[in-house]
Image 1 (cartoon, rainbow, N blue to C red):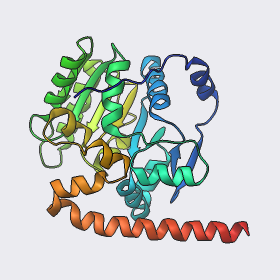
Image 2 (image 1 turned 90 degrees about the horizontal axis):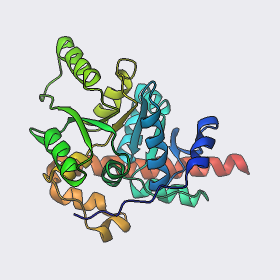
Image 3 (image 1 turned 90 degrees about the vertical axis):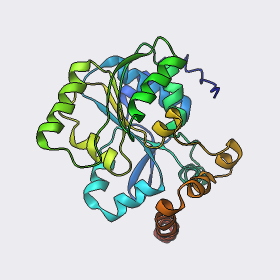
Length: 272
């Protein structure tokens, strides 16, 4: 699959501004969403990866993630402390545009591919996914971008790790010398994992990318571009995994629309 890499040159002044000013954000159900496009997101995260220091945490926020935050206050607190919540999922970008914000969708699959091409020779570590997926992601990205430095990978079992196993994973990541760690454990597990481990990791950036691993590894197909443009990627995923996703989409999407509408009416009433 050919992917056109955004040109992120000429963004130095913007990156310098972001180092001294908070990110411009808008909130959906108390979750801050960055007002950025794909090019700006790549440039910002690239600057973090090259700078080093305590790891920055990046999510690709969608409706499911926001609803998990609404249902679980401790998860909402974690989302509010992330360094960058990218607007993944068309509903988020639509809401942003409706609020007169300059924003566009920044999806995990698009970001993973474009960032891998742009941020060479950054050292990558991948963890998560099904059997063989983390390794396949690293090999596939290296085949597309030979200069990419694969620092390592870890494929967790389908159970909770013991404290000893968890410590071993942290040690493996730190000893690999990776600048960037990609995490694919599914929402909300992947976001919670990187939030809980942020003080123990020595990398520069940790990103929760979810389905992007399966797409890059070739274990799942992504929705056609037209369906993504129309905001129907969820429908394509539902057709692929109806048993797993039907109840989630039916309950989550309806509740999300209701709460966003309620919040919008409340805001208008307060403004009036």
